[in-house]
Image (cartoon, rainbow, N blue to C red; front, side, top):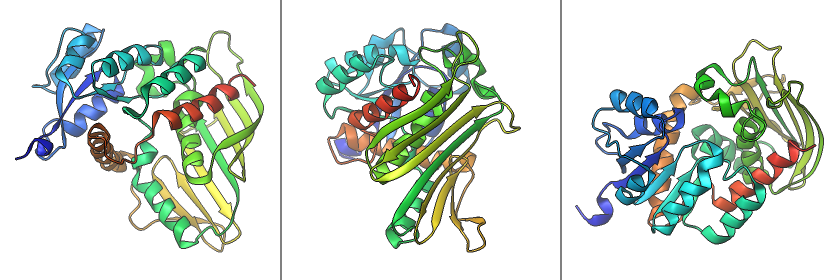
Length: 325
Protein backbone atom coordinates (compact mmCIF):
# COMPACT_ATOMS: atom_id res chain seq x y z
CA UNK A 1 0.00 0.00 0.00
CA UNK A 2 1.38 3.43 -0.94
CA UNK A 3 1.33 6.43 1.37
CA UNK A 4 -1.60 7.95 -0.51
CA UNK A 5 -3.56 4.71 -0.07
CA UNK A 6 -3.37 4.97 3.70
CA UNK A 7 -6.55 6.22 5.42
CA UNK A 8 -6.41 9.92 6.19
CA UNK A 9 -5.83 10.75 9.87
CA UNK A 10 -8.86 12.82 10.86
CA UNK A 11 -9.09 14.45 14.28
CA UNK A 12 -12.44 15.58 15.66
CA UNK A 13 -13.09 18.49 18.01
CA UNK A 14 -16.62 18.18 19.33
CA UNK A 15 -18.50 15.10 20.55
CA UNK A 16 -21.99 16.36 19.78
CA UNK A 17 -24.42 14.98 17.22
CA UNK A 18 -22.39 16.07 14.18
CA UNK A 19 -19.13 14.61 15.46
CA UNK A 20 -20.93 11.44 16.46
CA UNK A 21 -22.50 11.05 13.02
CA UNK A 22 -19.16 11.32 11.28
CA UNK A 23 -17.61 8.85 13.71
CA UNK A 24 -20.44 6.46 12.92
CA UNK A 25 -19.63 6.71 9.22
CA UNK A 26 -15.96 5.87 9.85
CA UNK A 27 -15.74 3.61 12.87
CA UNK A 28 -15.54 -0.08 12.03
CA UNK A 29 -15.71 0.46 8.25
CA UNK A 30 -12.89 -1.59 6.78
CA UNK A 31 -12.53 0.38 3.55
CA UNK A 32 -13.03 3.88 4.95
CA UNK A 33 -10.77 6.47 3.29
CA UNK A 34 -10.43 8.09 6.72
CA UNK A 35 -9.44 6.89 10.19
CA UNK A 36 -10.22 8.67 13.44
CA UNK A 37 -6.92 9.86 14.85
CA UNK A 38 -8.24 11.66 17.94
CA UNK A 39 -11.42 12.96 19.56
CA UNK A 40 -11.79 15.70 22.17
CA UNK A 41 -14.64 17.68 23.66
CA UNK A 42 -14.51 20.12 26.58
CA UNK A 43 -17.39 18.21 28.17
CA UNK A 44 -16.10 15.05 29.90
CA UNK A 45 -19.64 13.65 29.82
CA UNK A 46 -19.94 14.05 26.05
CA UNK A 47 -16.51 12.56 25.50
CA UNK A 48 -17.31 9.58 27.72
CA UNK A 49 -20.66 9.00 26.00
CA UNK A 50 -19.20 8.91 22.51
CA UNK A 51 -16.20 6.91 23.68
CA UNK A 52 -18.51 4.27 25.15
CA UNK A 53 -20.56 4.12 21.95
CA UNK A 54 -17.45 3.75 19.75
CA UNK A 55 -14.78 1.76 21.62
CA UNK A 56 -11.33 2.20 20.20
CA UNK A 57 -11.74 5.82 19.18
CA UNK A 58 -8.69 7.63 20.61
CA UNK A 59 -9.82 10.11 23.27
CA UNK A 60 -7.28 12.86 23.96
CA UNK A 61 -6.75 15.53 26.59
CA UNK A 62 -7.30 18.73 24.62
CA UNK A 63 -7.69 20.37 21.21
CA UNK A 64 -3.93 20.67 20.76
CA UNK A 65 -3.62 16.89 21.02
CA UNK A 66 -6.24 16.50 18.29
CA UNK A 67 -4.27 18.80 16.01
CA UNK A 68 -1.00 16.99 16.75
CA UNK A 69 -2.48 13.59 15.87
CA UNK A 70 -4.20 14.59 12.63
CA UNK A 71 -3.68 15.50 9.01
CA UNK A 72 -7.13 17.12 8.91
CA UNK A 73 -9.18 18.49 11.80
CA UNK A 74 -12.97 18.34 11.80
CA UNK A 75 -14.29 21.24 13.87
CA UNK A 76 -17.72 20.16 15.13
CA UNK A 77 -18.01 22.45 18.14
CA UNK A 78 -20.51 25.33 18.70
CA UNK A 79 -20.09 28.25 16.25
CA UNK A 80 -18.41 30.72 18.59
CA UNK A 81 -15.40 28.40 18.91
CA UNK A 82 -14.97 27.46 15.25
CA UNK A 83 -12.30 29.93 14.21
CA UNK A 84 -10.09 29.44 17.25
CA UNK A 85 -9.80 25.74 16.56
CA UNK A 86 -9.58 26.20 12.78
CA UNK A 87 -6.78 28.74 13.06
CA UNK A 88 -4.82 26.49 15.42
CA UNK A 89 -5.10 23.60 12.98
CA UNK A 90 -4.07 25.70 9.98
CA UNK A 91 -1.13 27.17 11.90
CA UNK A 92 0.11 23.63 12.48
CA UNK A 93 -0.10 22.82 8.78
CA UNK A 94 -3.31 20.80 8.97
CA UNK A 95 -6.35 21.16 6.77
CA UNK A 96 -9.76 21.90 8.26
CA UNK A 97 -13.25 20.52 7.74
CA UNK A 98 -15.53 22.85 9.68
CA UNK A 99 -19.17 23.06 10.62
CA UNK A 100 -21.01 26.19 9.57
CA UNK A 101 -21.12 29.06 10.17
CA UNK A 102 -17.44 29.91 10.11
CA UNK A 103 -17.88 32.43 12.92
CA UNK A 104 -20.57 34.37 14.74
CA UNK A 105 -19.00 37.66 13.61
CA UNK A 106 -19.02 38.36 9.88
CA UNK A 107 -15.95 40.59 9.96
CA UNK A 108 -13.99 37.83 11.68
CA UNK A 109 -15.25 35.29 9.15
CA UNK A 110 -14.16 37.54 6.27
CA UNK A 111 -10.70 37.95 7.76
CA UNK A 112 -10.39 34.19 8.23
CA UNK A 113 -11.37 33.42 4.63
CA UNK A 114 -8.85 35.96 3.36
CA UNK A 115 -6.04 34.33 5.34
CA UNK A 116 -7.01 30.65 5.06
CA UNK A 117 -7.08 30.17 1.30
CA UNK A 118 -8.00 26.69 0.08
CA UNK A 119 -6.72 24.71 3.08
CA UNK A 120 -10.14 23.63 4.19
CA UNK A 121 -13.85 23.12 3.53
CA UNK A 122 -17.18 23.54 5.30
CA UNK A 123 -19.78 20.90 5.99
CA UNK A 124 -22.73 21.60 3.69
CA UNK A 125 -24.04 18.06 3.08
CA UNK A 126 -25.94 19.06 -0.07
CA UNK A 127 -22.54 19.17 -1.76
CA UNK A 128 -22.46 15.37 -1.36
CA UNK A 129 -26.18 14.54 -1.49
CA UNK A 130 -27.54 11.80 -3.81
CA UNK A 131 -30.81 13.74 -4.02
CA UNK A 132 -29.04 16.89 -5.14
CA UNK A 133 -27.11 14.86 -7.71
CA UNK A 134 -30.50 13.84 -9.17
CA UNK A 135 -31.60 17.50 -9.32
CA UNK A 136 -28.39 18.42 -11.13
CA UNK A 137 -28.90 15.61 -13.61
CA UNK A 138 -32.49 16.66 -14.33
CA UNK A 139 -31.45 20.28 -14.82
CA UNK A 140 -28.74 19.20 -17.28
CA UNK A 141 -31.30 17.07 -19.14
CA UNK A 142 -33.64 20.04 -19.56
CA UNK A 143 -36.37 19.01 -17.13
CA UNK A 144 -36.69 22.59 -15.87
CA UNK A 145 -35.88 24.47 -19.06
CA UNK A 146 -35.28 28.14 -18.34
CA UNK A 147 -35.63 28.62 -14.57
CA UNK A 148 -38.35 31.09 -13.61
CA UNK A 149 -38.54 30.95 -9.81
CA UNK A 150 -37.25 29.15 -6.75
CA UNK A 151 -39.16 28.64 -3.52
CA UNK A 152 -37.70 27.43 -0.21
CA UNK A 153 -39.91 26.48 2.71
CA UNK A 154 -38.87 25.15 6.13
CA UNK A 155 -41.20 24.22 8.99
CA UNK A 156 -40.66 22.91 12.52
CA UNK A 157 -43.03 21.84 15.25
CA UNK A 158 -40.57 23.30 17.76
CA UNK A 159 -37.05 24.72 17.88
CA UNK A 160 -34.58 23.26 18.55
CA UNK A 161 -35.67 19.95 17.09
CA UNK A 162 -36.01 17.12 19.64
CA UNK A 163 -32.71 15.48 18.77
CA UNK A 164 -30.92 18.79 19.38
CA UNK A 165 -32.24 19.30 22.92
CA UNK A 166 -28.79 18.90 24.50
CA UNK A 167 -27.54 21.89 22.50
CA UNK A 168 -30.55 24.15 23.15
CA UNK A 169 -28.41 26.58 25.17
CA UNK A 170 -26.80 27.94 22.01
CA UNK A 171 -29.14 26.62 19.29
CA UNK A 172 -32.00 28.75 20.60
CA UNK A 173 -29.97 31.87 21.38
CA UNK A 174 -29.76 35.02 19.28
CA UNK A 175 -25.96 35.06 18.98
CA UNK A 176 -25.32 31.59 17.54
CA UNK A 177 -28.60 29.75 17.07
CA UNK A 178 -31.86 29.72 15.19
CA UNK A 179 -33.22 27.75 12.28
CA UNK A 180 -32.02 30.30 9.71
CA UNK A 181 -28.39 29.66 10.59
CA UNK A 182 -28.82 25.97 11.30
CA UNK A 183 -31.17 24.87 8.49
CA UNK A 184 -31.95 27.63 5.99
CA UNK A 185 -28.23 28.10 5.35
CA UNK A 186 -28.13 24.68 3.69
CA UNK A 187 -30.91 25.56 1.26
CA UNK A 188 -29.30 28.90 0.47
CA UNK A 189 -26.04 27.07 -0.24
CA UNK A 190 -27.96 24.84 -2.65
CA UNK A 191 -29.59 27.85 -4.32
CA UNK A 192 -26.25 29.54 -4.75
CA UNK A 193 -24.48 26.47 -6.09
CA UNK A 194 -27.18 25.49 -8.59
CA UNK A 195 -28.59 28.90 -9.55
CA UNK A 196 -26.05 31.63 -8.90
CA UNK A 197 -24.91 34.31 -6.43
CA UNK A 198 -27.40 35.49 -3.82
CA UNK A 199 -28.43 39.14 -3.57
CA UNK A 200 -31.40 41.51 -3.44
CA UNK A 201 -32.46 40.54 0.05
CA UNK A 202 -35.65 41.92 1.61
CA UNK A 203 -38.35 40.72 3.99
CA UNK A 204 -39.11 40.30 7.67
CA UNK A 205 -37.95 38.18 10.60
CA UNK A 206 -39.82 37.63 13.87
CA UNK A 207 -38.24 37.31 17.33
CA UNK A 208 -41.33 37.09 19.56
CA UNK A 209 -39.55 35.64 22.60
CA UNK A 210 -36.94 37.74 24.36
CA UNK A 211 -33.44 36.30 24.20
CA UNK A 212 -34.46 33.41 21.97
CA UNK A 213 -33.93 32.76 18.27
CA UNK A 214 -36.31 33.65 15.45
CA UNK A 215 -39.68 31.97 15.04
CA UNK A 216 -40.61 33.13 11.52
CA UNK A 217 -38.99 34.53 8.38
CA UNK A 218 -40.56 35.81 5.14
CA UNK A 219 -37.88 36.76 2.65
CA UNK A 220 -37.33 37.42 -1.03
CA UNK A 221 -33.97 37.50 -2.82
CA UNK A 222 -32.37 36.42 -6.07
CA UNK A 223 -30.11 33.50 -6.97
CA UNK A 224 -28.40 34.63 -10.12
CA UNK A 225 -31.28 35.89 -12.25
CA UNK A 226 -33.88 33.74 -10.49
CA UNK A 227 -36.32 35.25 -7.97
CA UNK A 228 -36.42 33.33 -4.68
CA UNK A 229 -39.12 33.23 -2.02
CA UNK A 230 -38.09 31.89 1.36
CA UNK A 231 -40.38 31.17 4.30
CA UNK A 232 -39.68 29.56 7.65
CA UNK A 233 -41.91 28.82 10.63
CA UNK A 234 -41.63 27.35 14.11
CA UNK A 235 -44.90 26.05 15.54
CA UNK A 236 -48.29 25.32 14.08
CA UNK A 237 -47.19 22.20 12.19
CA UNK A 238 -47.01 18.56 13.29
CA UNK A 239 -43.67 17.74 11.67
CA UNK A 240 -40.44 18.04 13.63
CA UNK A 241 -38.68 19.04 10.42
CA UNK A 242 -40.30 19.48 6.99
CA UNK A 243 -38.76 21.33 4.07
CA UNK A 244 -38.97 21.79 0.30
CA UNK A 245 -36.64 23.40 -2.23
CA UNK A 246 -38.57 23.84 -5.49
CA UNK A 247 -37.19 25.10 -8.81
CA UNK A 248 -39.73 25.91 -11.51
CA UNK A 249 -39.06 26.72 -15.17
CA UNK A 250 -40.75 26.98 -18.52
CA UNK A 251 -40.35 23.22 -19.11
CA UNK A 252 -41.22 21.82 -15.68
CA UNK A 253 -40.44 21.77 -11.98
CA UNK A 254 -38.22 19.76 -9.67
CA UNK A 255 -37.79 19.80 -5.93
CA UNK A 256 -35.88 18.37 -2.99
CA UNK A 257 -38.19 17.34 -0.16
CA UNK A 258 -37.30 16.63 3.46
CA UNK A 259 -33.55 16.98 2.91
CA UNK A 260 -33.08 14.04 0.55
CA UNK A 261 -35.96 13.09 -1.76
CA UNK A 262 -35.60 14.38 -5.33
CA UNK A 263 -38.95 14.77 -7.11
CA UNK A 264 -40.27 15.90 -10.53
CA UNK A 265 -43.62 17.54 -11.11
CA UNK A 266 -46.06 15.55 -13.24
CA UNK A 267 -48.50 17.12 -15.74
CA UNK A 268 -51.28 16.87 -13.14
CA UNK A 269 -49.25 18.98 -10.70
CA UNK A 270 -48.24 16.23 -8.30
CA UNK A 271 -44.60 15.47 -7.54
CA UNK A 272 -43.17 11.99 -8.07
CA UNK A 273 -39.93 10.87 -6.39
CA UNK A 274 -37.00 9.63 -8.43
CA UNK A 275 -37.02 5.81 -8.69
CA UNK A 276 -33.90 5.58 -6.54
CA UNK A 277 -34.89 8.29 -4.04
CA UNK A 278 -34.10 7.53 -0.40
CA UNK A 279 -35.37 9.15 2.80
CA UNK A 280 -32.78 11.16 4.67
CA UNK A 281 -32.00 8.48 7.24
CA UNK A 282 -30.92 6.15 4.40
CA UNK A 283 -29.36 8.78 2.17
CA UNK A 284 -27.22 10.29 4.94
CA UNK A 285 -24.63 7.44 5.09
CA UNK A 286 -24.10 7.73 1.33
CA UNK A 287 -23.60 11.47 1.60
CA UNK A 288 -21.23 11.02 4.55
CA UNK A 289 -19.06 8.62 2.56
CA UNK A 290 -18.93 11.15 -0.28
CA UNK A 291 -18.02 13.85 2.22
CA UNK A 292 -15.15 11.76 3.51
CA UNK A 293 -13.88 11.18 -0.01
CA UNK A 294 -14.01 14.95 -0.51
CA UNK A 295 -12.10 15.57 2.71
CA UNK A 296 -9.35 13.25 1.52
CA UNK A 297 -9.13 15.00 -1.85
CA UNK A 298 -9.15 18.43 -0.21
CA UNK A 299 -6.33 17.45 2.16
CA UNK A 300 -4.27 16.13 -0.76
CA UNK A 301 -4.76 19.42 -2.62
CA UNK A 302 -6.89 17.76 -5.31
CA UNK A 303 -10.13 19.12 -6.83
CA UNK A 304 -13.12 18.35 -4.62
CA UNK A 305 -16.86 18.98 -4.42
CA UNK A 306 -17.07 20.21 -0.83
CA UNK A 307 -18.14 23.74 0.07
CA UNK A 308 -15.17 26.09 0.14
CA UNK A 309 -14.55 28.66 2.85
CA UNK A 310 -15.53 31.36 0.32
CA UNK A 311 -18.84 29.65 -0.47
CA UNK A 312 -19.60 29.29 3.23
CA UNK A 313 -18.86 32.96 3.82
CA UNK A 314 -21.15 34.01 0.96
CA UNK A 315 -23.99 32.01 2.51
CA UNK A 316 -23.26 33.37 5.98
CA UNK A 317 -23.45 36.94 4.68
CA UNK A 318 -27.00 36.31 3.47
CA UNK A 319 -28.05 34.42 6.59
CA UNK A 320 -26.88 37.19 8.88
CA UNK A 321 -28.53 39.71 6.59
CA UNK A 322 -31.84 37.91 7.05
CA UNK A 323 -31.49 37.96 10.83
CA UNK A 324 -30.97 41.74 10.71
CA UNK A 325 -34.02 42.56 8.58
